Image (cartoon, rainbow, N blue to C red):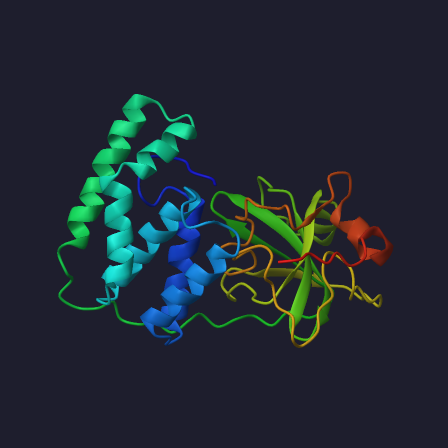
Length: 271
């Protein structure tokens, strides 16, 4: 779990769940179906009593509230967590000091009070941004929060993209060499690309090698990304803090990724 403050929205889990919910909502999905799908996803990794689930429920509660579709199940779960100080105990385990815990408790109460006042109208659905379809060999960069990232599309298999990503950069890599010379962080398969406004194409180079069966998982029409939460969504590129299911390449550049031999073969993980 990553958190950077005592506010309700200041954690990776909250932001990821809320963004995932609103993206599905804007696609026209029913609120109850979105909530069920997200809970099923997180319950594959966490027990319901795990402290990491608190922010999942908080994010779902806020999203349902904004959409004027609050469910008794989510509200009762949030009420139980707050009234029994379960989240405060969890943050105490994360080494939060008493001053921080006092602020966290205050923010939780404000949040709960807000949930008790229904909105007058549901948030309007917004058409999702147009996705940019990238070709194999595309070199590009994008910005995530205050960092820049260089990237290469190494392969495309069954509408899934194998993308090599760089370590965070201080400046935008706007030339071919600056992309290729960037230190590699990971290479992973993504089934969703960034919006066209976020992608800045630098060049397209010729990559003839096949990478299918490398970088963690073999892709076919029936396989999706199940092992790293939302990493790969337009909100989460470069923001995933759980790289346990990604291969890490600390001593390579993106140029090294142009050789398929530098990427490991298939890694299969059980559920």
